[in-house]
Image 1 (cartoon, rainbow, N blue to C red):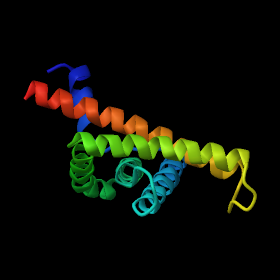
Image 2: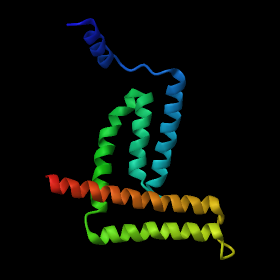
Image 3: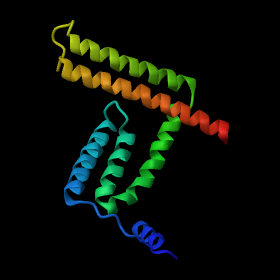
Image 4: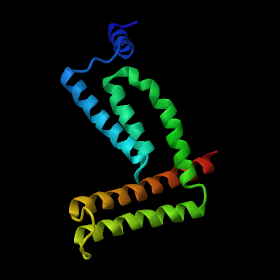
Length: 151
């Protein structure tokens, strides 16, 4: 076996060493995404997918966290499949996404006085939630349809 090949194998087998600054940055970003995902489990938004993303990011900084990824990944994929299981669910999700975008415009423009938390900070977050919802819905639909055609 050549020395170059041996060093490649050693690199794959050795645990990845991450610079301490990068580790702190990954841990911070992963924690923030994870907390946002937990909040979105009860608020409108892709909570399960953000919890999964947070765990993946956090798992790069803290390898012990990686053991929680697979159960959350399974649950996120089940939720994704359920979201596009019928035409009614797809229609409801599309209407919800469009409603979030419309509400964001209303909150940003403030045509009605007395709206709580009126302004573009609230409006833009509602618009972003609607766009993310529609994007995830399209991705879920393509993925499930591809799985049915291939399987």
